[in-house]
Image (cartoon, rainbow, N blue to C red; front, side, top):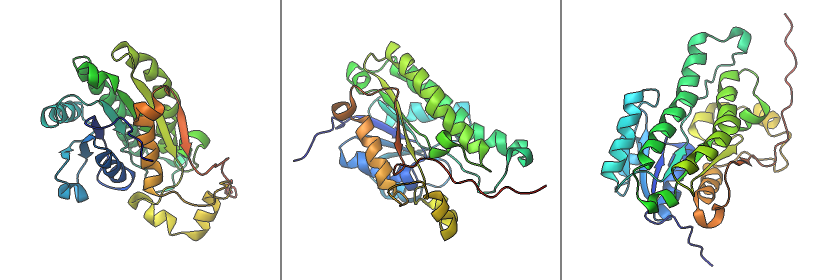
Length: 266
């Protein structure tokens, strides 16, 4: 039995779509018949070979660039965006406890992972004001959170702080604000744990690290990008999730916490 998720001809914008979860999300929405706009930062990658989508470059830290992204998406892909998937993000690979973290790193992580989503949501909601009733009926924002936002992550406080802000700050706030513009509009977060993406490749080569990372995870495995992308599609669907808003859905294999690393002396 096949289910129509109600996403045919719905305009979906996926940020950070050139690889990993973002690229897989683009593929899922294409298969569901959505009109997909794919955002990328610097490298277009596999998106260049997809003739049935609109690909647009933008620096999400830049106010003018984000305004242009939403404007071009509307002009090139049949009208204002209905579904905004805020997937982009950076995770600095260096282990930097707060006591040793450079201000430049902290500021840049917040600019990409938190200010970027703010700018995207602001421009999306502004454009939604003049959208058709059909576009408003499908309206929803889906943030990509992280287990780091729930449990924290030693050495990566900048990343965990931004993800927590999306999961527990913006999601419950915006689910109350979006309905002022689109009465059936929804806002949710999909929060994975470790996922086998290009961004995580080098880290996941460390077997001991992986064993620690999934030590409190009942399913005892690292997720694949499609595991997360499918959940994003479910949350976007007005058929399957039309009465779900303000939720943070963990896609983490049942993770219950983190093992603490041995404390360092000094």
